[in-house]
Length: 395
Ligand SMILES: CCCCCCCCCCC/C=C/C(=O)SCCNC(=O)CCNC(=O)[C@H](O)C(C)(C)COP(=O)(O)OP(=O)(O)OC[C@H]1O[C@@H](n2cnc3c(N)ncnc32)[C@H](O)[C@@H]1OP(=O)(O)O
Image 1 (tube, protein in one colour):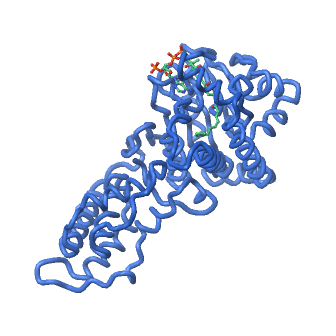
Image 2 (tube, protein in one colour; image 1 turned 120 degrees about the vertical axis):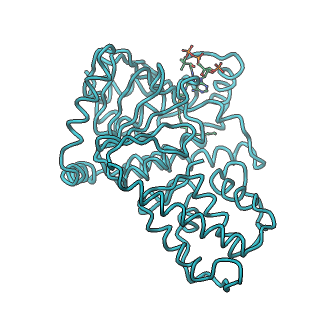
Image 3 (cartoon, protein in one colour; image 1 turned 180 degrees about the vertical axis):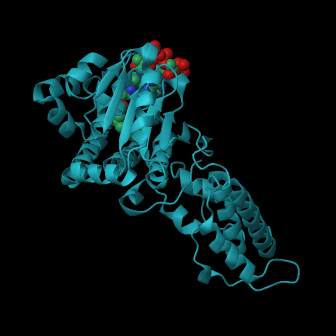
């Protein structure tokens, strides 16, 4: 489970506001007195403040522990209703707090202070390590995230499912983007693990129906989609897609919001929305006609024409195509060189280029998401999804 703080426009990313507030807890909320055996209120307050100053992100597991101990220390045992199945983050937080059972407040406070003290020493010693050292970020289940040479690489990592985006992956990508927007990398790269870049929306996302029924499911799906795409619209640094293989659905449409798209000659680009009873998203109803002209956009978005990498390059969706045999080497050599360019200049240039359209893109995203909310309830869509799930019908 991935948990990080959020800010600014990106704070619309799905349901995580509570995490920020719980990890940046104001000291004045505390009313804990000193006990003979445990940490004092002052120690506790000081630990709460130190968490904000940690040089190294402690990872989501530790953040959840801190959250749980903080709640236990200040409020006692968990007594709030369990969040719903789809409220993944709040559910993880609730689980962590609830797992502490009847642990006394004083013990929780002491454990919090001890945990922070351990984090401080490991953060201090690790800050002596070369900051650029390659490090895989913990806490993500559907992504592998590494930082090296001022590049944050976000790798979609469900190769057995062709990197289909399940709801967890949508959430984790939003978190990863939020973290990447603030880290010291200059560019952020998306790629896929295995033979696919991504097969798009995981069609099993349609199966888990909440107590509120399919209408609630569709409503939540539209909120998730809108928040997800908003994160791409607002991402402040150069965003690069390294399309290592076939790309389907939403993994194709959001390419219109990327700054560079490098493709292996094995990659294909497919948006079979009509086949699925669905409609375009990812702002593609606007970006695709703008990028490739109306005629070619219609072929892709209404008729589901699958493009080869060469065709996608010719239409302007792809920046450059490389032979698969040398794809990784050539692309990463190029990106490492680009990553040495001055960070602020690149960021500001992106702002100048993209800012004119931001509000428009947000409005288009909202409209596309709301139209899809209706579509997901249509017979056309339900039948297409059932068809895939029951017979494993292929595109
Ligand atoms: C109302 C609820 C809303 C929920 C949340 C909404 C969030 C926003 C949604 C935004 C809208 C997005 C739209 C899209 O992206 S449309 C595109 C959807 N994608 C597809 O239709 C692709 C379906 N997959 C296929 O056709 C084939 O799998 C594919 C051609 C991609 C590969 O074929 P191949 O024969 O090479 O491999 P397999 O089919 O054997 O695949 C291996 C296993 O992976 C599973 N798989 C692959 N893709 C998906 C997928 N998209 N969804 C679910 N599962 C997928 C496949 O079933 C295999 O699994 P098993 O090994 O278990 O059989």
